[in-house]
Length: 489
Image (cartoon, rainbow, N blue to C red; front, side, top):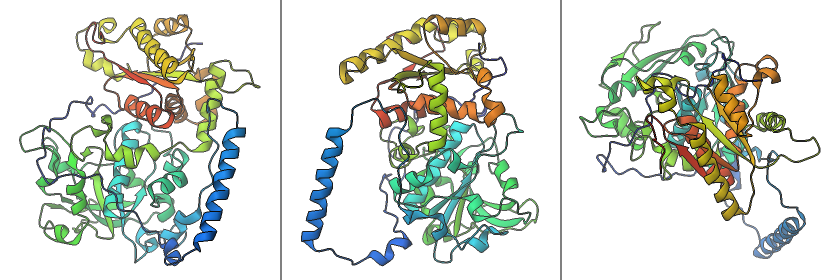
């Protein structure tokens, strides 16, 4: 059965432009560094100064090495379809970084000896994932604890409920990898609270663009019952020199606002009273907050496209999927490929072809000349297959297509190539699990490919490509489009 015409998988809201080339050619402001200070967990403080006898340490290490060698020798080699959920230390239990259970007012649950940071989202889901990656990286370089709000349904039916970050991303694994706790808003403030909290925050959006003289809003603020008084950030937070049209701010420029000297020197800038209580508050010191952190970079714009990206290297690549979501995606992928129950999930090449809202950029050009044809996509798939064959010794014949394309003839062409896709209508995925899940499952399937082929300019492709390269060491390709023969090479 072909995907229904109503199926929409959008990874960017219409107000987000295509990924572009960076306009910044050289360092304009202070040099940016991907340095991360290790977060010193309070729960570990009692361990300071402890020493083990050298002989005991050597003995333990030798035993662990022998055991590990035995496991490697005895374990059969196979393609890792789904990782077993690791067991993590409770060092970063959220209970250690708040006063207790969620409270009616968020501030009642913050520890006096701890500083926090938060921001909110207002784009498509994939961009929101990147925004939270930027937030967590900013938390690391300011040595604060990030508080993450739920994902909001900007790209699916608005009747879909918000979705907790930790139900998509494996937070214990992330926290262990980055050496810092990660809190969620529902762990701090009661989700059912009707108390409207006052809060002072920084507005980055006003400083990095010219056409909207207001802070960047987010539906999350109403859901969290936050009445925010905004203070415009200084113009020097902008990543690029004056006169260059770009919306990006600098990580380290924003970070300086989390420290006393720069904060105190920046409080006389434009302040907006809160919309409901009409109170004017300076940006909060204990809970550092910014309106929008999607457009942030260390050296250049659109850095998640680059291999040096500190937000990706130090945070994004550690944002693995929640184990239950990963299992569910694997079940869908196996059924799509007709894998027998007694056989492991075979390696496959994942494809993401984004067409839906990208039609806008085709303008007067016929779609069959604007978008890459299936033979062009197949050529890229063949390149990935050859690289897997020659560099990893893997023969991959299974291919899974993910796309928001609605044309039944196009999907018939996909079938003719012998490629599979998840039929969410037949699976009754939305009916059984909810409207978020086709998007989530597509993203997981894309990320678990032995290799990947994606769409130039799509952030969903960007993250899938990064995950396949980082998690599986897989080859990737990006198909260019927008004119006839755009992907010729």
